[in-house]
Length: 159
Length: 178
Image 1 (cartoon, rainbow over the protein chains, first blue to last red):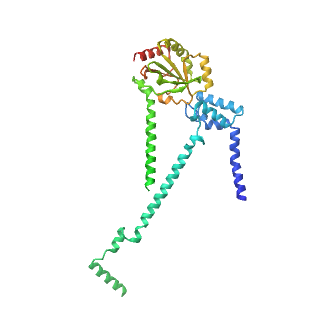
Image 2 (cartoon, helix red, strand yellow):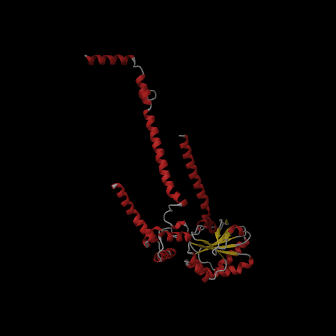
Image 3 (cartoon, each protein chain N blue to C red):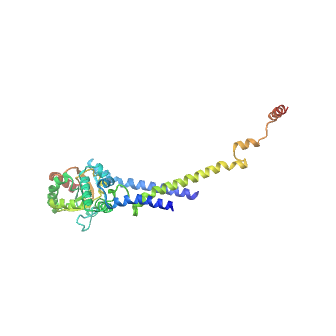
């Protein structure tokens, strides 16, 4: 119960500023997120004529009470989706968010699979003693001279 | 394991395909450069909505005509300087079958319409708010003017600043004779 309450409080903490930003966007916030179509930097980094016009348009729409989404949509209608600093999270643009995540997931699975295969290939030969060089040496008979010397050494050790 | 290999091969092929597509579509950026070197280049495809919303302009359908293509925006100082010369040249050359098209790029539609009213522009104006055609033509600043001959090739000269009447006449004559 306490955990659920904490989760609700945390969600409210995140959702409230987002909602405020959507309903009452600030000039600085939009200028830092939208791109100047001529210079391809964010508006707050540009002082080109069209950037000044875009800033003036944003200021006017904020005064008129437009939401963040409304202002963004209007600028996209004028200049295309390139005006948004980041791709949208719906429609075709959602792919831009999903593809990198999918790539990471596929990479992680491939890496895990590779690691699993590698660990199996290292462990498997031991029980059969058939494939490793060490195992092959263990099965080879000793040379007679070497065997005689080994027996002598062992006998001396026993004594 | 075989399925994983197939997925990896498919992913690599898809990425290669994207790379080839990207390179193929960037070739248009060479147009301005080649024309400046004195070469004639096939005009990039240009199919854009008319500014007044009454239809679409397709450059490919203008084969057999000389077309003057001018890239402009209302906020550009050089565009204001050349506006009267362009409109006068369009009227002067219209009887000889020469067509002018102004491509409004990276501009607010409202501001562009005010500009057109103020300078009483009478020739065809198309809208490319995102400026998606700029890269294909190799446009690096505004205004810029190109001449397309009757065979659909962009021919020299390429005017990189406010165009004068003299420059426009010279460019059109050269396009008519190419």
